[in-house]
Length: 299
Image (cartoon, rainbow, N blue to C red; front, top):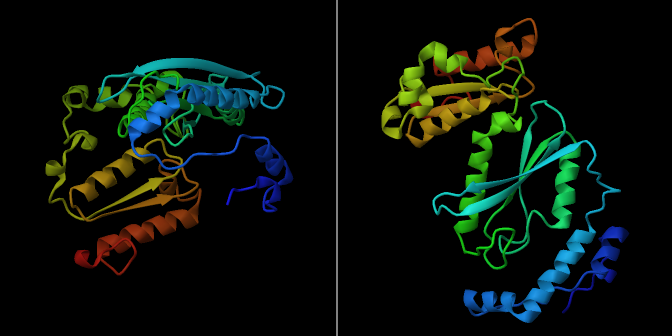
């Protein structure tokens, strides 16, 4: 039976009205990927793609989501492991403030659409207008091209999305993003590496910088508990090290204390209850008591 949105009383009347004006979904099973590609590149397929693009572009209404106060940039980067080129649309408030970043992967079942389609342009502006930087990746679709001309099945699109995220992380300082940067600590400089041992850092010495450690380096370490604070610029490094320990088979636990900054628990007059909770958990772990942070093989 064909779905009729006009009779679906669950929908907000505005949503119901919009659905009744959109072309119906007439898709069905296919025998092969080759059939899908042939349909997408047929005259009818190209006309259908153009129709949807016009519909999506009509959803980009600057009266609803204005461009004012925002800054826009387009980046082209190399994806790994194939070495192909992908595009990234970057939108942020027009300030010099370091901001959290939303990494957005557009819809279309990894098969079609583009982050440059009108509805996604507007969505990116809306996110940015709320005070975040927005990185929208245009990856290789599996059927119809995005702004990237190549189409390819899994894992091409996933690799492109992962590569885009890595690129964002590598370029965070120049893009003005890094979560929690400036909350008690500022880390966008080389002072820590230079003071503690820049040669060891450049050599990837895991004794100096544990995140360089391999699974073999970590194997056999004692049971470990890691406590991180939600608004600490070092939070993600602590979580990453916890995951390395787990992967290496080291008994480990990680706790994240919400609403706190770097060394918040050590400043016992600021949030005494949080300081007590953290101290209690650490001591319970050290004593090997029956506590959520302890495992039976640690007792």
